Length: 379
Length: 47
Image (cartoon, rainbow over all chains, first blue to last red; front, top):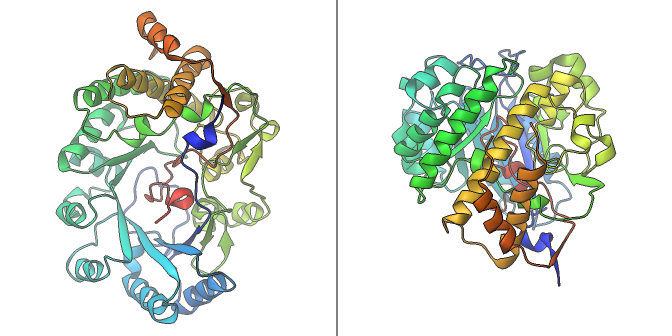
């Protein structure tokens, strides 16, 4: 009997289109890893937003779902515009299926904004960036911890989790930060910052130490959902054949459209002038993204890498650091391999402890993937 | 680094059946963890 891993992995839906609207290029913080190095006070107009949405909604059938994301800068600096856009969509497109999402630093979510968010909780979700303990967060994110009303996020968006970005400076507190976030009652989506200098050799040792600590924590707290760094699936590599294509990692371009404050279209926010400058952004408009990437187009170091199809990557960050969307920074590559080896180790331990609920197909794919990583992934 | 003990490896190897796993054909595995805080909705959110 042949097992098709397509049955094992939950299939992605193609029915959701993400539209990212950069409401403003301004931000009230100056986070140490921020890749938006060309911020300004520019703000999108309601007229621009309306034209974008009218165009996106045109010629779509009723089953098409839209995920309209408010981005910045800090999008709540343009709160009036955000309210107007939500009102416009609600009144003009009552039959469309949509949900709004705002990526926020949380510092402005108080009083009137909280009231509005509660009124619109059925159609607006916010995602908070929280970088760990107060010390970690304040170091990374302009001493803003005390400006956050964490209780509001926990009470109103209990399933959203928070986004924890790890800088080189907070790497040595990774485990402490994740546990702190769990103790607050949040799920934790964490990743290493993209586009920063990870060249210091000691980062590899520090990351390894932190992941061992974190794995011990999760093995002794099996009821806590592990952070994304250790929990994302690895089973997609549990097959024998040689792959000639791998799936594109994220929704850039094919599942999402990002618009700058002046209404120009880009593959995602990382390719906008606010992030990579006007000249690079202009060149990036010519990049063609497709859902399947030919292995022969990958970076040399990735062509024969066993984890090529489960390796988290950011095409925008790759483009900025190497000039090639498929070419990952060497230092980040090494750290990512450590994370994937740690994940295989953790999942083997979870499996041994009986902590995983798997179908027979999932079990086979997972075991083979674990062994493949253990035997073939060298750092 | 993060190497399984020989006994755990053997335990896993014993669990492998003779069934062949076909090459997978699925969309991207999960969230790349970019700055958007959307938890993978850019590609996988299904409401």
